[in-house]
Image (cartoon, rainbow, N blue to C red; front, side, top):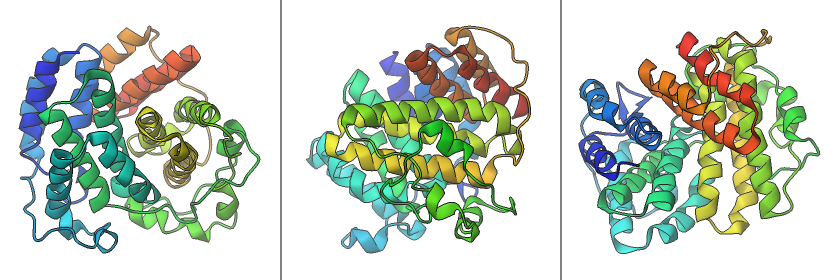
Length: 339
């Protein structure tokens, strides 16, 4: 990976806020990390030249985060949260900071339409695979700060108590009747579904760290295949049914194994919720998508340029590497057709 390009991109992006035009998430750090990782770093700065025009300035802080529980999910404290994590990551090892805050933030996995956890997943992948550095630590801090700012639980989520495997659990996810409005409005309708309390805990709980990893791998894989059948319902938002559990899976190696089972439960709640509120009610036959191996699939996504297409391609390449299932690669091409 070209460390120089990624560090320069982070420097440019860290002058901007985590959101723009209201609730829209800043996808820049996630997209550029994927582009650089998959060998398309030469596209990054030109892509950023265009993308940065849309972004807001870095928000200013008001006061220190003293009572963190009271400040969770308060968008007016965005600058305070960013400052808080910048300081924490200067004072303490990043794994220690992550280990402290992951269980605090995990119940609010719906934050920013799951972009909080997704951005953390990209930042942790860099730190685990490529080493730490000031810009990379700053990115983890901004990612954690954004998650804390928009912290939002999935209604009814909690420990897994079901007996279903991933395919059966996904097949049982109902759709909300009124698929309109933003994600907060849509999530607010989940308790109206009589089946929801059983669905959100339907997965069989993992009994070991290895089983937790297998369950998450299967969840990413199956959600990617489901995108081919239901993605036409909301092509952009349904991407997060795949990318949110991918982010959790990427973060597991940096966490204490005791956190893996609750991480699976939270990832499942995110995928189930996004599926329920955005997936089409009826499946369509998988579309015809141009064939190609992983490198070509990502290259097409990079040429397309949309951040969601890039991030979905990045996620399904992970799923393909883990499962060898060529079908899942088609999800990125389908997103490119729809978005």
